[in-house]
Image (cartoon, rainbow, N blue to C red; front, side):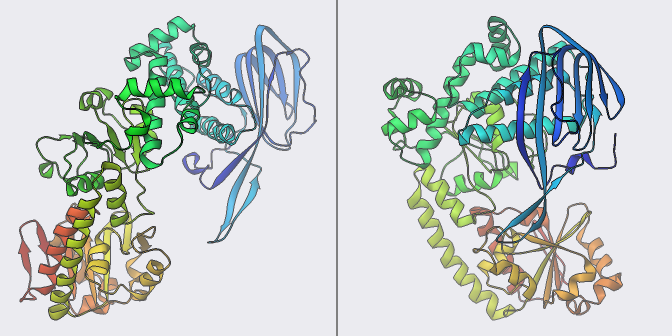
Length: 560
């Protein structure tokens, strides 16, 4: 096996194309139809024994065995046999890697290599469940094609992780039940019954139901029903489909039966649901918690960047800041909150659906592709508070106009660069986050190269920051530099570092003492109430009578 490749990033920038998946039961008669393998090929043997020759190397097949062949390799079966339940899964796929990307096109080349080859050591029981899922979504619909892509990626990711095959029976059952939950979340719009779910889990239906209820506190069919009802609510909150169309989209062929079940579930007919005002809301993203509070809604439970700012009536949720981090909060917290709606960013929506998709409808509000005003309007529409959103934006526009006049009078309209210093490098910010205050609210000018990046996008969207080094800062000329300092260093330490570093001293603004040091955690939140408060701080910073070192309650400012 070749271990030189970083397995964690191998699939970045790739497309997988499923060529063929066969389930072969005639084991003794199985043989490769081509001498050389053309595509990446997974051979998974179940309840089979015998021997393979892969590129003239012997591989023993016993019980469950998984092998990966790369294009150009050869394979020959020797004395294969299996019992009545024996099977061979033969999965062929191609990998394409992006080699060129512009604003108008992406170019991919076919990848012929792979970090692993030959016999693969992984959790073979879990692999069997996953390949059964892939086999279950054959057909020509676009939805099934999407599911095939998703399941194929899951299989390849699992192989790259090289999981140990030694796991407990309890974990086997947990993983199998989780597979059926994933299946229901992906295929809720299709015909699903208990026998189908038990087959995917590899359990007897009665035992499967018992284990599922222990894990989720409801039966598999109750879970599926609730999942479908929440999907219907999500659709109704953002569009107005005909009931016949809606019922089909969430897995019901009979629109009248669907309407009855919907009304039993939430107390309203589907035609009236979107007109009801939702008040019991949970926010999984702290910027959107700020949006709700701006609109006069106190969430029943929420993540917030400063717990002390969260009203007493709202329960604080401890959630990871990034989607890759583990989510340890339990379902019971959400069950007790009894939400009518769950709001989140798109980076956590998949994890939210996995954990709590049956508890309430989940709406993800776009983050990077919308600015703070877009997000406020969208959330206001969802919760029936559009007049409040309009009123806040009008008030804020007046506040910005007064702030611009005050700053322009005392500070002028210089070019300002906004840097964030981190252990991993340095970022130069555009017109989002802290950049919104200085570039959009106060209309200060960014360095010309940053302005070019900003101007390629709709105001405040998509572009957030550039990765630069101190040596490159002379290419980003500015009259002033604002340093966003991490909490790991004091502002005085950073001040000392800047004033003794020859690289920084080559920058004219630094040599002339035209810089500020602000604490990142005070300026990071990109949301209505936060930018209103930060605008006041920025005006105080830039329009004060004294240009000497100053200190403000929660804001440390140093100018050289």
